[in-house]
Image 1 (tube, rainbow, N blue to C red):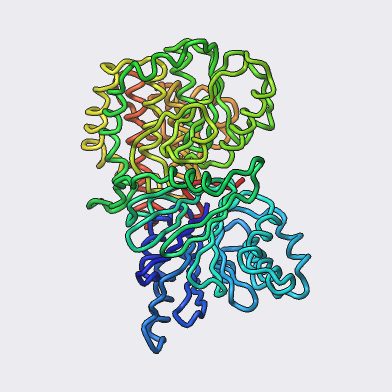
Image 2: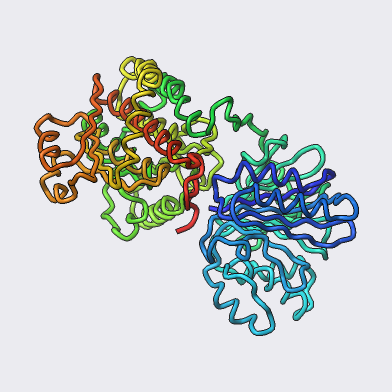
Length: 583
């Protein structure tokens, strides 16, 4: 959920760390911080609550108070989504040891941090309520009490930590090197002409020419000139030469990433308007790409979370109706607990925009494990729909179906949701000629419905409760619209199937309730109005699979306008992060 950046090279690092962090704020914006080592080997730490503007102010004040230019060429930085300890400066990363000689940033969770904290007390003074702080103190303990050098102190510390995490570590004992480590959590190294970068996501590595994903359970030591790395646990040891060859083969050419707003006032609005092109691209998919996937398959199970789960519900409709395959949809966090029976010839389709969603990864790992323990009848493939081919999810599935929609910078899913729907439509066997006209239809909706959505938003924000109601494909669309309004505009919202209105939901209706009806019957609207609630209708014409996406696009704009009218940041909703990498 948090974002890590590190740099070592020949440039002054402070401003470029800030710039890189700005591309990772979607991963968390409760607080931010950085640490760097000066030429005199002094470690400097700056932290601030809130967004990067506050950290930038701290840096500016530090620069103004310094008697000479900083000239730090090695540093680490972090933007935080709070898990342990409230969102304040005290709990912001980086965390340091009591002597201020070691700085640590982390993305992940140390499950046994309380046990480590107890072990180190009372010799250590803790200043925060986070799990990350114990890492800095434990490294210092191994150096000061056990006499280990910095590399072995870090190695021993990592072996003591329980949980999935990624780390970047600075130490004045190694003033020209950054230590990075990854365990089931993404960390990407970038190579540029003047040094090396490291970050939680490719979007922070725009200045790099090549990149590679740090292999799992690998500790790397990075200087401006080179990288050395070791596996901390290896069942079969390999020669250093072979390890170096493996390492070199992992580098990839850096892709061109479109991470500018291009004249739009927000990433969300930009990404909404990118959807017609995405629809056209997926509609043109060669049928041969997906034609053979049903061979030997008798049923499908879809595993997803959040917006992807809503898309999966629509996928269930079309796969059963068009492909005639029995389909079941699981909320990823419930899949392992439910322990559903293994079905012969059942395809598992995992959906995650980031490919890092913790609950989806946990479900896929568990599914792989239990299939391996069964006989060959249960060896149908596990396939991922994801926007990140280099993600953790990609390492645990048999095949990837990439969305290829470019970087989605806004926290709220828009274009990735539509891409998932289009891919599920194609998998269900819906032909290109049926789907291609949808691109121009959505473009028309964006041109003609924008004013109406703004007018609706002006009314929506006046109500303490908004209920979305729909049937068929529009029921999951109602659920997604409700989630968007809650996420982006911070409004209380519910969604339910139109036929369920009389089964309890009538109790919520009053003059303070707004019901948005998606292609509902007239008699249902009359029943709602008879109980004093206000009603808005959104009835679009066309094929059902077209209407679902066109309605969704309208409601994306509704949420956008509601948030703007309330003066909210549509790209960074309160308390939320784009990639949910922790349980």
